[in-house]
Image 1 (cartoon, rainbow, N blue to C red):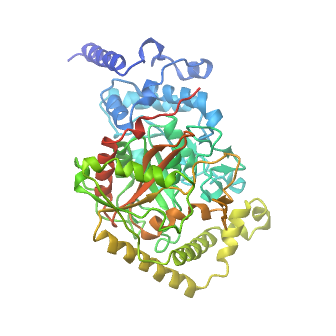
Image 2 (image 1 turned 135 degrees about the horizontal axis):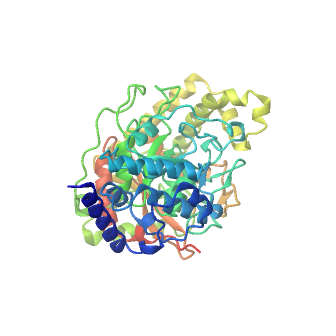
Image 3 (image 1 turned 120 degrees about the horizontal axis):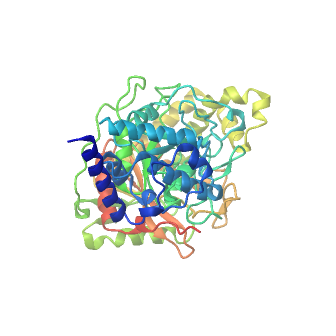
Length: 517
């Protein structure tokens, strides 16, 4: 086939794609527009490219139904329009440079070079992880000029799949707290209501994803940081099994509280990104060697869920949350899903104290070097100082006892898993709150003893080391989204994703996208 015939075939395929995908047509700026023209031209185009799921977009790029330059233009245009309001993406790279990278990706495709499912797709990494040549501030003024010299492990893997890194997603300072504000970039706002917070610490990622500023997003989770913002922004957030995604830490044999995971506007996209991020790495001694099983169609009638609710009244819950979660589950009874109330045989006050000990100790170990510098300490938010100081006097014996308590918790859940496929409870104890509020001081008139006490509901999932996913349960009368945490036994990430896909197929919560002015 001649080059002319090949180009005619590709152009015909692209025209068909633009007609069927819904609104691209003449409104789309064509690939002939150079990088300099983008900088000078106010883009006026439909958002149909950004509406595509990541998996659909990937296929469209691979088949050359849409060019990488068109994709980059569409996303940069949307970022230009909405990011000033929501502040989800930070450290955005120069548009000329990004369009040049997209043009290079198109040239590679023209030569038959395909790098992977993320070929030419724009991606912004959570601002706690390193991307070569982009600053990693961790939301701290101390690190505002911290230019990364190498990629973190999962970023290496995304780069090999062809991703183009456009910037970072916003976080709370050092990732501490489920409210993504900091003194470097400001506060990230909820995709469904910019007056409300986006959650955290993957707040920028979740908001950007829901706003269609990114096709897919990575995040990390120590205390619900993939689950809470996913619930607040009506997207999927997946915290994988301990060791599933290799997390390179200076303390590679201990640090097992926080690690990276994936987020998506649907389960398929979430799974695709997780498969790219996951897998053994020799630099991380506790990373898992097994791979995720292939997805399979599943029926909800195959599964039995244990509903843990508010731990029999132990957790304070804002009115409406429990009702939304139980209604979402009971609405699937007709699909054969079995849901029963259950509760772990465990002292939940002991669980909270275990959490405080291990969290304080871990954070103090990682941040004490900065804390010891009076100049840096003065720049830290009070909550960060409190965390570090809480860990300075913890003894080795206390850490050892906390480890035993964590093991007891794991065993209590294992007992329940002998009866249930999954365990579930709400993803948050309060709905998304005012974006100007740092954290809720009370729930139902009960005072919260710390900046993260209001997120106690996520501690059990973290300390279990088991995979946990946030699934949407809809919106309350005020239009605030909420989600449910579903937990599977250790290592059964694939089974949990199969369940999530079956849940998504029988609900329509994810089809409700933000209405933006």
